[in-house]
Amino acid sequence: MRVVHYLWSAQIGGIERLVLDLALEQRARGGVDPVVLLGVGRGPLLDRYRSAAVPVEVGGLRGGADLSPGKLRRLTGLFAGADVVHLHAYHPLVASAARRAGVPVVFTEHGAFGIGRRRRLAEGVKRWLQRRFLNGVQFVTFNSEHTRRTARSIFGLSEVPQEVIYNGTPVRGAPGAPPDPAVAERCRGRFVVGAASRFTPRKRLDRLLDGFARMPGRDDALLLLVGDGPERPRLEEHARRLGIRALFAGYRVDVGAYQRLMDVCVVPSEAEPFGLVAIEALALGKPAVVFRDGGGLAEVILGHEPKDVVSGVEELGVRLEEHRDAIAAGRDGAGERVAYARRFDIGVMAERMRGVYRRVFDGQPQ
Image 1 (spheres, rainbow, N blue to C red):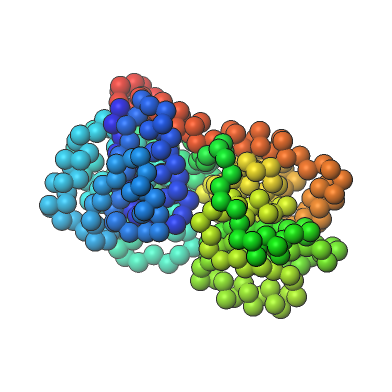
Image 2: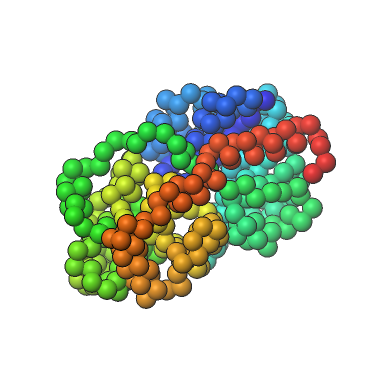
């Protein structure tokens, strides 16, 4: 079954990594012949896409308002050669091409709703167009119940066949490259609390700094922050004001190598659609602590350890201390975390998606 996956670019982000992992898993398992269509041929992950064992096409789109007739014809032809079109983002021209191609369309809503951001008129028009389009596709999947509730409040979707299919990640396989020796040396002999994240306001890394500062007896503790973004200067200044021992390691390609240095991983985001980084931590046997307002994050972690879903920075400080005591006493619970993470293996997601493709291709009732 030939499936064309569409996403906007190869930027660093959860959706971009997820689509590549899913396409590679589908290729490895057989039964699905994936092609990836990028709206624009740019982004740090572009080389990884092009070197992967999956064909990659580039749409050459110039933005959300690109309605070029030539590009419409080209994409319509690409989609017409597929059995299923799987869209991971909305673009008016891409949606029109999928409709014209006459093949079944599966749309995955990943939860990038832009809630809380002031919308311009063009964005309002795009949302109206997206609502009309989504209510006519063959199937919609969501990466969490949180995302489904939010999407239904925005787009309706009450009459559209739909299902929650949690994101997957490769939780099997050999360890990747080792971490930077200088970073590993700073972590040696310390209780390491860490996060791997983009440094943006919604990620709420300030809550992690504040909670770490409230952890009792943190003389032997280190806060390891992996990532980069516009919030970094403000967070570095905040760490200095709090007087905490924090190491800003910058952007790293192999996040897992740095998660292995952590004793506890914290994902302090608000309204996160899913949060693969938490599953990746659990797959390494590491606790993943999140906040109750974390959206899909809280939903996933509640299924494993409700105590790791905290309500505020004071509770975070207490929970970090509890994890340190448990580790010191040899009660780290790593095996249970790894077993739970296997529920979110990319292979599980690939099989469930294949079932959706088969249903929409065969035209079976949902």
